[in-house]
Image 1 (cartoon, rainbow, N blue to C red):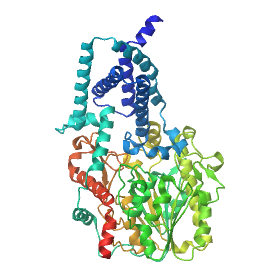
Image 2: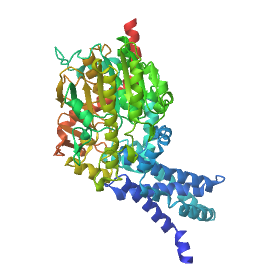
Image 3: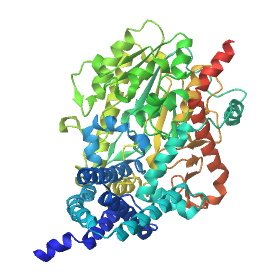
Image 4: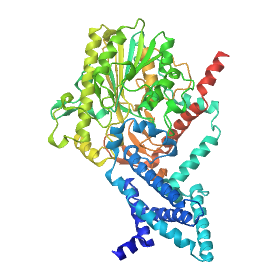
Length: 615
């Protein structure tokens, strides 16, 4: 027992614990390159932190050390959880998300990885050794104090030089992007410099980028086919395209949406989610404004009171009554504060509706749609209603009484099986909504658009990837994960078309504007009308790092280290790998589009342009 205690309080045990901690961490964030080098660097930094507190003269340094060590361990834990969902580690710019995460505890718990808790196991052992070390250090000869101080300064200088990477070394950049300490210190550095830096693009440069995007035919197809009609846009929570027109165990997953596609509908089957870290909120922002979200956080918080001129404002200018409906709390994602600037005249949230049927985090889709129809019937003028569904939200909890799919034994109590059940429930709610619109006499004069906001099943989760791959008959990759459906249903139009041009939420505004006969008189539109475009393109913000994109044939994923030559590209729908070197121009285009969108937001350029027009 004495020898065990001596080993536990020995530097060998502490070194082993440091190494084990980092091995677990890097395994959980899928680092499989230079792992030994990263572990060694991390261990050196842990050693520096340990020595600094051990030799410093701070009062209550033991408590301070324990707090710092525990907080860093918590950050590692957060990284692993965040990576499990976003395929990226936490940024200081995501600290704002803590409130959003706690608002959906069931989703938070479902994202946890049990192995992540091993990152906390070493804390009591390290603290016990720290008490022994700090006492021992005080009894060392002064010469050792000096040597340790010099070693501390030298290693600290080396680490900071690596983060700065003055010679732009690709090898150092790889380390900085993956090593725990350098990546987070580098993130703080980038955040500070981004906030201090002035805008990099002038107005003329931005307008040139916008003009290069436009593909306008002489006579646009489907122009004004919905002009004068009411408009209902339904953003479908976590709806992915692979469920559309698919059957599971002999049952149609989305029979009502499938039925719509068969008549009076334009269906876009190569449509992608291009959300930022705001997920659902960013999906609606991008769709309504044809601008890209940013990596720093959700637009509704960062640019709450900017001037915008998106779909809500355009519809108001046409004499429409414009309002949004959602079955959750009004202040979630800062919607109540941001919506007036987006152009919404009213926001009907959970607090304004009858909370008679709660599923998961809010009012069920069936209840919400049932309450929506009387609201629409009471409108005296043409209306534009933006509706957000909720029941299909992760972790896809649905009581057995609401489940209508008969699952195979192997899919019961799995994420995949639960997801199919909630998708089916939302589809049933849509079917009833259409029936109620007809009964209320609203259907014939209403254009109804549907699109998914983001994925529900993460291809980075092994159990999910295995189940979905088996279902779709190929490896479940990002081209399928980020593919969401988009349908525009125009009753009595006799339109039936499936459009395969690649696009994303960035393209929704110009597409629906063409159908509704709206004039896009502002020059800050970064999407295109997919009904009339031949060359599709969409850039990504989250899940794939910036610079990643999809065109009509290929999805390109920039490497984790952001080294172009080490990226990957594959044919959409087949997983066939292709040479990445031929896509450098489109990679640069993706970066330019994201940069342009950010500059439009940072400079509040819409305000400036509208003031210039008025003058």
